[in-house]
Length: 495
Image 1 (cartoon, rainbow, N blue to C red):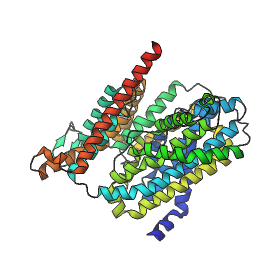
Image 2: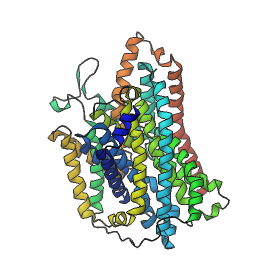
Image 3: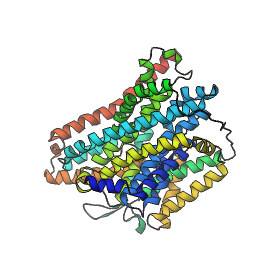
């Protein structure tokens, strides 16, 4: 198998698409308002005719590149290109004000690379072991796993849990449209033949995450961005290398384990890392004034999430966030089902992904250190050009899946819905989670009851089921506790 993996990884086509994916990801991450999720959703239709390993690595390259790319605009413009870079703004922009933008960008690049490599190592060590455990799952365990995945809605709901639950329920309803997998009855098709096979989540994702951003960009189409492209000394000095070697591996691990938790994302990892490094510091009062630790920790943390987020996706088939949901869609299009059987039946592909993730992080560091001036110029791309291009890609991508104009209408409808969800400050991620996990929960619920003769005790009949029940309670309670503590702190400050 090792020779097969080596042969696959050294394929010139695979290496080229990793390189292109990382470059495109950095391009997307640089531009404020465009997210890694949007980038991956836009690129997904391009992978339809590709080999599975090449297509997945193109998407991973975009993901890794976009998470890192957000720090460029955060440092230069005080505007995070992606939510992952929100914590980097605090100290990164202070470097630019002092004329040390090059040093800050170098710190960000090396720290991102280190955090990403650490996450890849953990991915390789943990995933196979977790997949072996998951091979013991039957329908009750898979149902509890799906319910646990659905509880992530509480964590990705944004400011309002109620809005998130409504969106999640809507996504679950969408998953019920089409032919019932157990009985063969038609459900909620309203006589529309295009709905017999259900709602395709590819145009839904493109609409919610990409077209909605294009609609948002129309509002800001006349705004212009000025950025200083005179960047010097991107390679960090020797004193910074010592700090990177000391802190980046630690917070890369922190980010990786945050990424493993479904619902926790790059922005959470960045702020947790920033808070922890501040608590560890002998001079916490210097944070926010432009010190290296304020860039190293959040950038290592948010890039650590990239590898961690792949662990539940590959081993359990549960999307921990919206990017992982798109990855599941990409694997499904290739006829592959994420989960423990993927390791058993497609081991070469899995280990090719592991090796490709290392290469993608190396490409990110190479491009970040050598082509930083090119990516800085990306910040000046007029929105009059960018927005129409995104719209065209959305239409082409939606049509390419099944050559259906109906899918374009689906994409446009969900693009409008996503736009209004942004206005309502509601997260679109619960819709995707409900749409993807709904069939898994429904099918295994019915199968489990058939196996147990209608007894609901089957859902607490094994240690794994009980373990998931505990995790479900924890997953539901943490966001509520966090909201209450935040409300108390706000009242305390106001009082």
